[in-house]
Image (cartoon, rainbow, N blue to C red; front, top):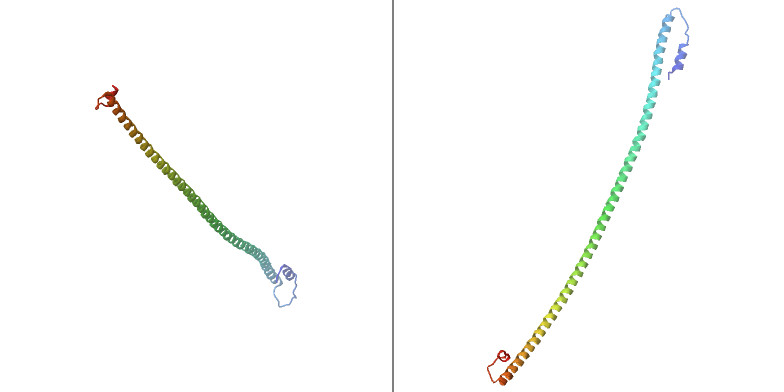
Length: 179
């Protein structure tokens, strides 16, 4: 490959002279201009080679960055899936717990309703027994009072008869007798 060292070797090279040859000054000028252009080309090649290395380095860096992004994306997707699974599991657990709590509340409410119904029936039975007892006692009291009233009426009739016989007026009433 052509580089500045080889170009310097060409600058210092001497050629033999012949009678029928080219004018040495023109040949030297031409060679010098070729060497100058070749030097510029070598410099350009060096610059472009360095740029190519830089671009390749950047490409490698971008490739590493792309791989990191891909790995990060895969990790994020995996994490998202894990969270989705965790959220689903937790939501199912919450629903199950909600159903269990609702069942527990329902059973408690049913037990309370049954207790209240039993208490209401017991109270109704007690009140019915109380009403029945009071009705029976009232009937007995009324019967006793009727009996006493009948006894009093009978006693009064006997008293009136006794009084009539004492007064000699068989048609007299007890009011007349008392006056």
